[in-house]
Amino acid sequence: MTTLENFAHKYPAFVAQLVAVIKGRKPVVRIDFELHDDYVGLIDLLVSLNLVWFEHSPMPVRICYSSSLQKSKEIKVKAYPWYTETESYRFLRFFTHLSEYEKFWEYLTEGELIPLELEGGDLNSSFETVIAKDFEGLMNFLTQYAVAKTHFAKAQQSEVQIFDRILGTAFGYPDCCTERFMVERQRRRSREDYFYYETIIEEGLENSIPIELRAVAHVPCSVFCQQSINLGKEYFSELKDYDFKVYDIVIKELMKPTLFIDLWHQFSVTELNHKFVNYAAEKREKDFLNIAKTEAIEIKEAMLGRIEHVPFQYLSDFIGVWWIGVDPGNAILLYNLETGEKKLYKKHKESNIADLRFFRYKL
Ligand SMILES: [Zn+2]
Image 1 (cartoon, rainbow, N blue to C red):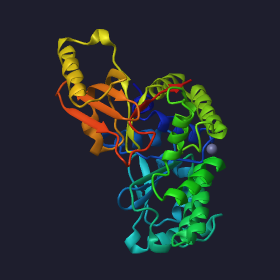
Image 2: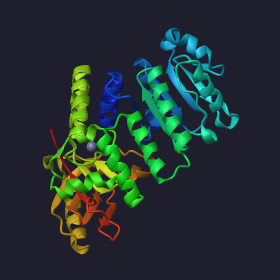
Image 3: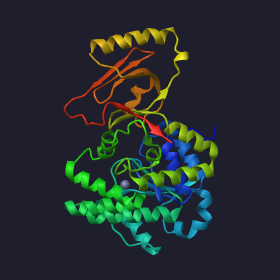
């Protein structure tokens, strides 16, 4: 299996977005999951694809690119006195505590970019990796990012919206979705990401969500957002053209239902065929149904399913084969086939209408 195929199984939406960046259909792609053991594989992949990326994980900040790009970028690179070379790729290091950001932005002015000073000398305190097609693409992104940060970091409410707007453009999100995000952020302060899922429930589309909406990197403004659907379509068509096998994997992975406990607990589930269920599984099924009875859960959907990948390490105890029982909007019961571990979630007063259900997709 190639690295890209392997990544397509684990991070299908990311791979669709990455190829969109390679094909010039998306300005940058951000990694919003933890890589762990896949980090080295990702670096190899980015190097082999001649991509350029920005790392902030956790220190120092680095601009990275394949050494094969070195020749064409030699003049620019000479402007950065602190770069280090490795066998396969080069990276520029920036240490925030040495005010090297200032130097960084000064050097940018020697190119075609806007002079900037980054207030506070920090882009984002969290782990961050942003990948672009080439050096120019990454610099354009960082320039917009820095403009947003520098001018609107300590902003008033209205200026926060300008910050969002700049970043939305920098990441290539549709205007309607950025606008909606800003409005919701002001309205609810947190959990603004829920508005998309709420539109799915309100429209009764939880079993037929356009799969394109799963491929985009932003939260769509609604389940009907044509701009987002079109963007997803474009990613798929580029991917199909780029590598059909990878495209096939991505579609299959994205078609898997999502077990949506809440915004922070969402998992793709591979449904397992009942004919493979052995004696142990059957016994567990009885226990599972008994627990449901005891807990007074009215299971309306049940499946034997495997959760293979989780975006963050702290969710790793969800990996496994489970009997999954759902009373949509009210309760989810997970019962581990191997260990007999039970996880039970019930509706409470903070629950959103989108919580505690399966979401399914259509092509
Ligand atoms: Zn939209």
